[in-house]
Image 1 (cartoon, rainbow, N blue to C red):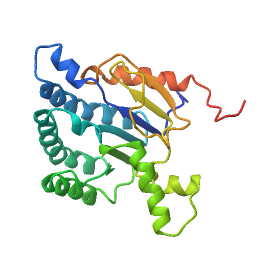
Image 2 (image 1 turned 180 degrees about the vertical axis):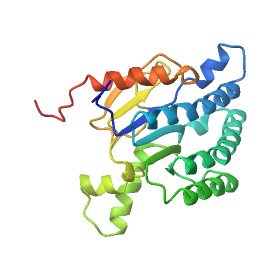
Image 3 (image 1 turned 45 degrees about the vertical axis):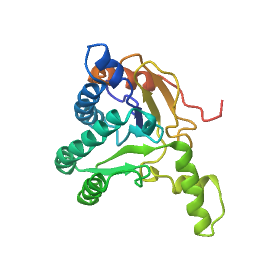
Length: 228
């Protein structure tokens, strides 16, 4: 549809990998593998639809409380994913940012992340933020501490400029898959006026048509930002 209103920045809480696998008699790690494969097609479709920036919630700061076996598998999967995905990122003029704390990540994973960010730093067509060991509350604290260290006044604008996702701006739309109806500590500050879209579809089954449904929903909304 021509002249369809497309969000500039979209955040996605990619939920449901474990439940998807369990329903099929598989280990939760299998669901995470299938879910990671789904990232490629959704990122490609999102950018081809006109979205400029994507922020994907891959691993929260609270996810460390999951069973060690599952966490270890997730970390291995992330490392493998970045090694494979960075070539596609560079080819499609996408700039990669990995947002969240890195202190708890392995040195091997951090190196792969830093290599990917460095190789894509001159790309300008799109921004792709992957949130790993990320928490919205921690992000706000980090931004405030940066302002304090610089001796600057703590203001809304100052915090906004020091958030992990500052280069992408505030998300116009936040999508959550998997049937849950909460933000789970995702983009709390910058998502103050984001449109929210929830779907029961589990992340591995969230395909191009499902993304189009979310975009159609967004296109039909009137954003007021507190005004009439």
